[in-house]
Length: 249
Ligand SMILES: Nc1ncnc2c1ncn2[C@@H]1O[C@H](COP(=O)(O)OP(=O)(O)OP(=O)(O)O)[C@@H](O)[C@H]1O
Image (cartoon, rainbow, N blue to C red):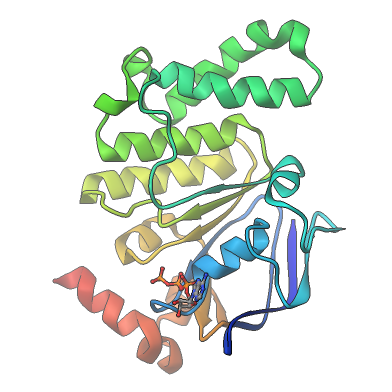
């Protein structure tokens, strides 16, 4: 699905991404972990076209997308959630989903059947984000966690193949965090999506039970399952020690 080759990104004299490489299998869930400032969000900005790298290449399903504008990369099938919910607070839950549904149907040239087809998809999306009973609520009235789930469903509505989530559980309670992990897993199991998540919350990482990518100083230093990498001395020193400690507090 995604191949990243030797990406370099500098800000002034500081190299934030230092020949970073990684690849994602289609239909997999992956989680990037790493200490503050190691370049996780910068990587997302490069992948999605918000930042142009000084070196390296990004291939999406074999196609070179390096340096393309963000709107074009979104059109080609990569979509992204920021930390803060990107929802329309003055619209209802259903309306928030209809906007991206309409956009994706129009792209697919299905304007004539837009409403008939969207009805089924709308219900599937409401079910995914657990908001079927609140379809007519104004989004401004939702809890923080509900807004985050709604936005994940909005990403699914545009039908991109690769979904990037930047700290989707930030500001969530423990039950909300667990529910988010279940939702993210469903993106793969029910919808066949490839998912790349940045996350600090180790209870979420455990619940997600997925392929982990450990970043340190702008590079990928380890990959694997949590049980394999959590015993790695470099990972413990760099990140997991502090995170596991934070979880137990
Ligand atoms: N636009 C920018 N201009 C200058 N420096 C930047 C810019 N964006 C990020 N940086 C710097 O690059 C480094 C990596 O930042 P980045 O946000 O990618 O890290 P991160 O791993 O996502 O951190 P966190 O876990 O705290 O979100 C930091 O030192 C940050 O200050």
